[in-house]
Length: 113
Length: 114
Image (tube, rainbow over all chains, first blue to last red; front, side, top):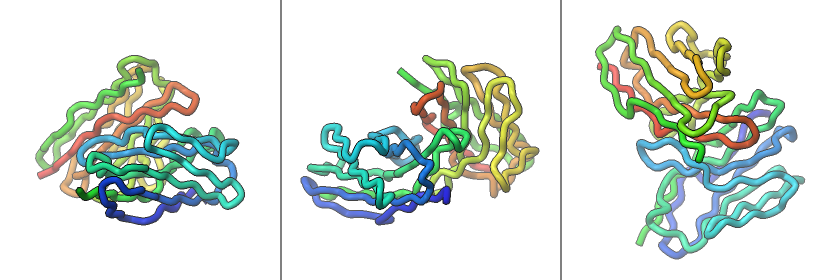
């Protein structure tokens, strides 16, 4: 129940295209859903996050869509750029789980020119 | 704001020796710090959670005697890998929070045991 599923495992997108990464969860106690971006040899950095009372959140080229009834959420990267090439992790946490961040398995995104 | 510094970024040590990794919250007081381990092309695996002045809480399967965690102040937590062996080679990442939903990650430490 603590698991967060993520797909696809890897993604290749043309420059200027839309990158879409999907995640799903089971634990209805989760109440915060961040996305992290990680470059090789670096720690993950928060990209964008959403609470379940909101269906969509947009920050620049990054948008989270959230479907509470389906227990699914997704990250859309518009106008993808080669600099967006990184590994993306969706995550979930709840204040009842001792503040643990539960990470998805990750998606390796490559944006090709 | 919310910067976490992790040191060293890379370390190579001989098998059987111990290595200490530091994690500092530079501009905030961290009520809780977390230590993760990450293997190549895999997700982050939580090793332990530590609160200032308390014993760390280890995840199932993590050897507390091998991975010693000290959280002596609100800005510093250390992870010591004792009697390191090649299988302990990995990327170790710390994270800190001052409460709420803000979690900041360090830049990671690449440990290689030879």
